[in-house]
Structure formats: C-alpha cells, structure tokens
Length: 147
Image (cartoon, rainbow, N blue to C red):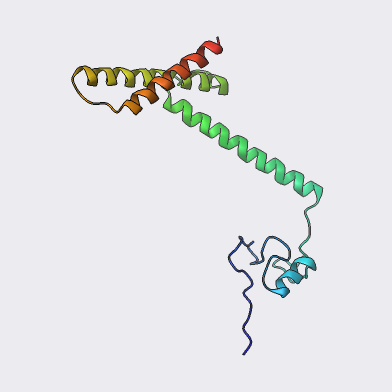
C-alpha cells in the first residue's frame, strides 16, 4: 500500500490555501505544480498571479499608514503616562523630551529611596544601585547634550 506524502510538513508557514509560501518547498509534487502553473479553480475563480505595480504600491501605502498609526498611538500612550503632558502640544519630540525628564525624576526618586534604606540599616542589592546610578548619569548626559 502506497503512503501519501503530506502537503505541508510543518517546516515553514503555509498560506491560507495550504500551499507552502516558497515554490517547490512542499513535499507534494502536485502542490509544487499548483505554484508554478495556477489553475482557474481558486476560491474566486481567478488565476493566482503576481501583484501588479499598482497593487504593490497600494499594499505599501496601507502598510505604511498602519505603521504610522501604530507609532502615533504609542506616542499617545506614552503622553498619557507622563505627568503634565495633558493640555500640552503633543509633538513627538515634546513627548520624548518630557518622557526623558520624567524617567530621570523617577530614577532620582529611586536613588533617594536606596539612600534612606541604607541609612536605616537596610540592605540594597549593589547591582540595583549601580543600575540606577548608571541610568541617572546617562539621562543627565543626554539632557546636557540636547541643550
């Protein structure tokens, strides 16, 4: 009894039609033939063809728009987390500048807490202190460079 070869062997993702994305990478000879010579029996009755230049351009524009919207959304999220940003002009540069200032403030507060813990006789992991001090130095140097 002959065994049937699987169409998809799991070594790479498949497209919705079940064919491997790379021509000839499938284990089944019939699926490789489908990739090389499309048949009019696809879901919409049309042959599977390469995208036209207009379609490629439209896809690129849609992808770029989606990327820009995602960036804008993340800037909005960041602006909501930084105190004092409401009511301000929310240019990307302004959001980043205020975020750096706020990060420096938080790091300095942590540094003060570490000092208080040590003064009270508590233990603070030296790696944590080194990390916070390094962050403060870095943020301060970046602020001085931007002035």
